[in-house]
Length: 229
Image (cartoon, rainbow, N blue to C red):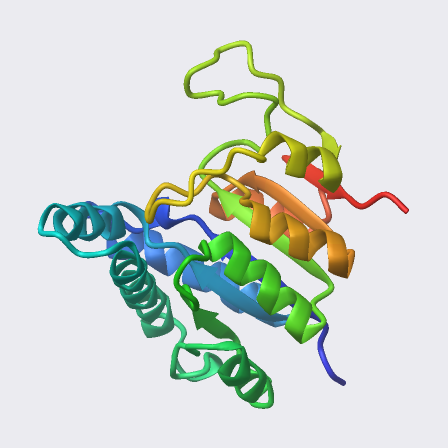
């Protein structure tokens, strides 16, 4: 029986200079459990390590496209950390484009990758992969509780949406910052892909417990992005 595919974007905040192997083992065990029910495609963010390299490279004069590539390389190193904890259950390489993703799917194994194209966040990469693979749902496990009407890190009165229409999200992000390493929670490219493919999407705070409850138990947490007819 062919398993349904899902895409899970893992926040880059999981990967930092102080990350412990025990943390990654917990996520690897969760991914194994998810793999019993679905064929998951995991996309890892670059996190603080990517921003560290991007900022250093920017000071040294590297152009924005080169900075994007630097961030992509770090995200693939993060992906390899998780692959290390999954053994034969996981596809052994990190696909570098949509064609390689399609080839990896044939293995029926768990797939873990990082960023793909310069100028696109791993949110956009995840949405594109979900569209290309016919994924049932896109789960964006990030470092905040969901989508707010303003930045909760600077506005303590920011309101968390239980659900929000994708068109409203697009309006809210019309002034997107596209410098490497500064992408917002959901960027315009990812939202446009979600809109055109009518991709069911949920944004929620990343933790082993939350991912298990949202993905496997179907418990509502965070923000559902809806697509109006």
